[in-house]
Length: 179
Image (cartoon, one colour):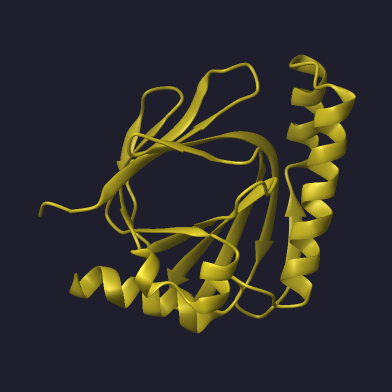
């Protein structure tokens, strides 16, 4: 199936090496965005069954529908994974995204926040973050922005602010199915 309006999402590590690539992501047209998402100038992408390449070159296909939300200048991004047991949010603490010539890029700073369908919230990969902070020599500015991004993300999540509304993620997926 050919997807119209598709882009690639590429994540990098701080040293510039590729971390992961999602090859086919459909961009939700701005006219179809929820008004809150429009107000915040979010970019929203949907994928299911897309090819993914890891840093080591291994490739696999996504099995769970994903709706990815990028907010301008935010030091995180949010992926709603539409699983059979409910929506699980997997959030990357990351640099603000750039979008150029059908490619979205960002730097992944290892810290992740997961919100399970039951509402429980878990911050993971702190050890990996600390290891890479030393290995890649993150500046004080990066450290400050990463921690501020984590705090802002946790606040959004706990207050169920956009885009943490399961029904909107499901609606975007239905738009993708019916495009």
